[in-house]
Image (tube, rainbow, N blue to C red; front, top):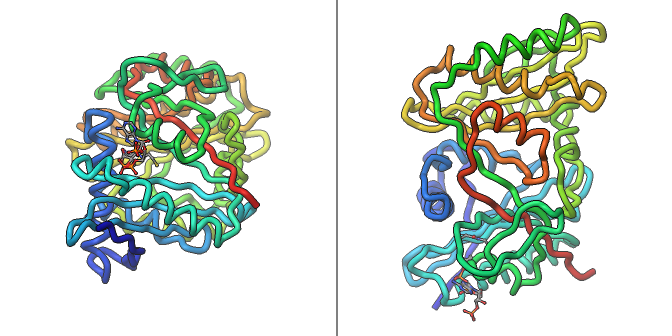
Length: 354
Ligand SMILES: CC(C)(COP(=O)(O)OP(=O)(O)OC[C@H]1O[C@@H](n2cnc3c(N)ncnc32)[C@H](O)[C@@H]1OP(=O)(O)O)[C@@H](O)C(=O)NCCC(=O)NCCS
């Protein structure tokens, strides 16, 4: 008999609800590791927790499924109410040994019920698709496809989702010598652009600019037919987010480019670096403002941050990044640096009845 309940999100590491939170995270990251064939992407529960704590800007709820006393599945429900309270991001994970017995469907039904209560109109799911033989389901973007008979594909199609986009995961083995590419990119950017670098907290003079860039990031990435809403970022939210994230043992290494004549930021990129030297670094957002594109600033940002991370925190085995399969500009940059594909995710959408 499957029993679904909502988890209490622990207010800090070890606080009430902590053991269940750890178990739920291990189901999610365990599944991801199985499908990608590597645990390099996994966050520990301590690292994941800050992402659940900004309940004003990103309210997130967790539900789990029990079969008797055993936790067999976990589901995440996330909103970004800033500009669009009508979209929810969902994820369902079931332990491999407990699949095909209705646990995923029970969790999905629970999430749909919560969404209906919240008046949600659109649900979005990002699901990793491992290798699968046979027929392919192409993304309507024209770039990428997923195996039609994979469990997550059959499951999502059965729940009324449609595939909108394919996202590529890529890995760059470290160390990598980027010095000559970096010198070329600095020369080609010219004297109008100056590089800056910082760790964890945005310097006060760049907070307004960084909040604007974080907001732009939510709409500037190619989103296929997902039509993801703009996420509102203010300086207060940026400061609060960085305060919450400072509880994580990971370090955020940011590279930004100033457009010197206007004293504004033309773009930024960031890497999330685990404390343990043998763990892989996660590439996070990269953005160049539209008016500054075409100067190879995306390449300059990536190269500068790769050089910086190897100087400040040498020894990590690799960097992993995710890009929309149709995002040729970003893929060109990553491929030129040496990133190679390691797997693919489907981005799925379901429109809910009013
Ligand atoms: C996708 C996932 C959540 C399904 O969980 P589950 O508990 O096995 O799902 P259910 O038992 O409720 O299956 C519901 C339907 O999905 C489809 N399905 C699920 N697994 C399938 C498989 N291996 N092959 C074919 N169809 C499958 C079937 O139509 C199934 O109905 P049926 O058993 O009556 O034929 C699970 O495989 C999983 O955790 N995968 C990794 C995480 C993930 O990709 N999540 C994405 C969805 S949000």
